[in-house]
Every structure is written in structure tokens, then in C-alpha cells.
Image (spheres, helix red, strand yellow):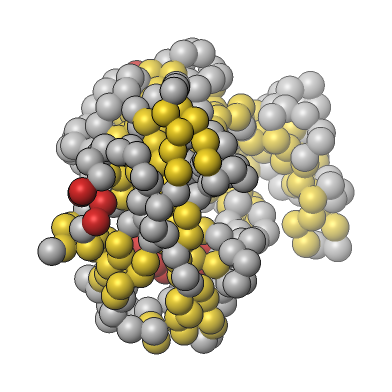
Length: 357
């Protein structure tokens, strides 16, 4: 009998070394290790024909413990036999019934999810590579994996894969800073995963510290929203509003595989005698989530300026030998006029342009 599981991302979990461990007065002992029973093929090529609609199924028998206990099963990928660079493709949880874990489980992933995991492993698009796949079973009580437990590992299988060029993926946000609007329009703020690897980044201008917000998989809908499960933790369809950590522009990084969220104060601006406020203070740029770049449109006079992060000089950009350079020389303005300055933090290098609109 097969049982379909809903796949939920899982945060990084603690690994221990004891094969026998206690919870309360109960000693849990490992039983049978998990076993991979089926997967579609050992040669997978991801391309523009299957990345949107294709799926990748993994069937397995979970590991068991001799005492009835909840378990979580992770499906892991790695490039090494030792799984030193393991990436969690997904996870499935079961309740406390010992009989239930004897069932054959099937987990279904999209090719986009698989491609994101391969990107995280650092594989080169359109080039064949070998990876390992295994299932890890861990004990849990009340949703928490038991610290000190020894996970049980299935035998690994080897797959030949050809990743596809990563496609940018998006999720959406709303909150006090956006009037709680959720209307699926082009102005709704987004977070972008440029490598489609489950890590999404957005920049939001919060009115105050503690300003509440939520993350959404589909604009215009409140279903499957991500909310706060405590400091740095995300929950799906549970929890409370996420509080902003800073006032003003904040970089928000949501890891939807680990279900974590991080925030840091983050703003770009220009400073110099070519700008309205001279070398005394910055003129701040704004984030354009549609173009994925920082922008500033203003009048400049003959002189010089620099672009810098967070009103300081630790990270600044200028020009050296006519090329945008971190820590480079002053950027010259030879003619007064109305300018548009754009700054793109596209991986792997930052670039900026200065044009007359």
C-alpha cells in the first residue's frame, strides 16, 4: 500500500551519536533502517520542456523505532558518498503509530524543486554530473526532533543528472508597510530567488521597528502564507505576523527549505559634491522589485559622488579605469542635468549605470 505525503521543507536538525536515547522515562531504540523502494530513473535531464510540469517521485519505507514515536523523514541529495554537502530536497512526517511506519511512502517533487536543489549543490547547468540520494529517518515528539538521537540512513542510490539554467522564482509580501493590500497587482512587493534555490531576498521600507508583515506564495491569496514561529523561524499557515527588525529599508532573506528568515538594515545611497546634500549626507536610492535594482532619479551638478551602503564607507562603489569598482575612485559628473542612477546587485557582480532619462 502506498501513502502520499504532503512535502514540507524542514529546518536544519541536530545530529547526535547515540543509538539509544531517552525521552522522559522511555528509551527509544532504532529498529529497521529506511529503504528506498522506487524512483523514476537514474538518468535525469532537466530542460525547458519538463521544468514547469515534470515531477520526480521517491518511494521509500521509513525507518522504525522499537517504541511508538513520531518520525520525520528527509530526502537528501549530495555530490559525495559521505553526504558532507547534503541538501534536503524535502521531508515528510508521521504520527506515533508504529504500524503506520511500515507503509510504503511516496513523495513527489517538481522538477523545479529538484533543479533548485542541484543549483544549491553547485552543479553546472547543462552539464552531466553524478549525485547521491538517500532517506534519513529521525525521531520526534510534539513536532521537535529529539536532540541526541542517532538518525537512521537508507543505502544511497546514484543518479546521473543534467541541471537546467536556473530561472528566477518569486514570492510576495504584504504588511503594514504596504497597507496590508494583497491585490495581485504589479506593485505588490516581492522576494526573488535568482537561482531558484529556495532562498528568496526582498528589500522593504518599514515604517518602524516591529512593523508586521507576511510572506505569500501566490499574490491575491492568503493560502499557505508564511508567518512567524518565533525569532528567525517561519511557519506555513500558522504562527503570527512577522515583526520587522529595523525601521527603513531592510533586506529580508527567507529560506523556504530551512523555514528560516533573517533581516538586516540595508540601504544604498549616493554622496558627494555633485549631489543635493554634498559630502555631508546620503541621498537614498529606492528598490524597484520589478527591475530587481536600486534606483535614484535626481538633478546633479558638475562634481563627483560615490555610491555606498548603509551611509558608511565600509562598502562603497566608484570607478577605476572607467570600470565600476568596489572601493574605486570618485564618479565624475561633467554636466549639470537630470540623471537616473541604477544599481544592480545581480550575481556575481554589482554593476551600476548613470543615464540622462
